[in-house]
Image (tube, rainbow, N blue to C red; front, side, top):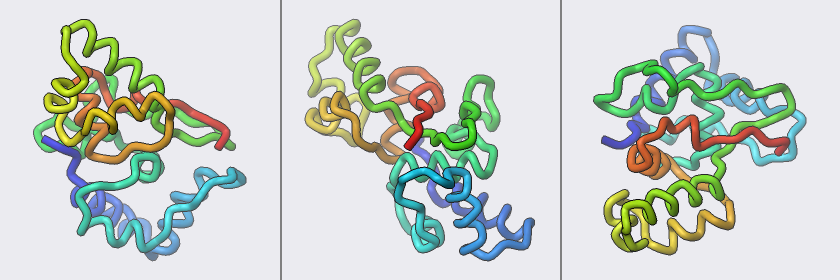
Length: 168
């Protein structure tokens, strides 16, 4: 099963209410984890509107998960919550957690070659990707939820192992 965006929204809303925060205050706290970094902040409208979406920008979701102190797999239906090895790595002040797309590409390519698969077969088996979408990862960039969860499942690795911390 894929990442449950609505469940992530519900968890954010529950924590927001428990702490007596408005959506704007919650958004500031999430963005505050990355203060002094030259990056585009998450908008409140992105967070409040996410319950209606099935796909979310991956790096933004990582910041939401960090704020909640939860693992990505906690929002995958049928996956045990807080399973060993799924926690996101700690991030030092002044750094941000991002997906390491070149490393993800290398892991996919290695497993693909090990199994004697073509890129087309790999894309079909992972699901939700074209060949170009997978091979483009070699150049870096961004990915989305639930796509990265599908990749992690195909690689048989926790989502957290596909991340890295960077200065921006």
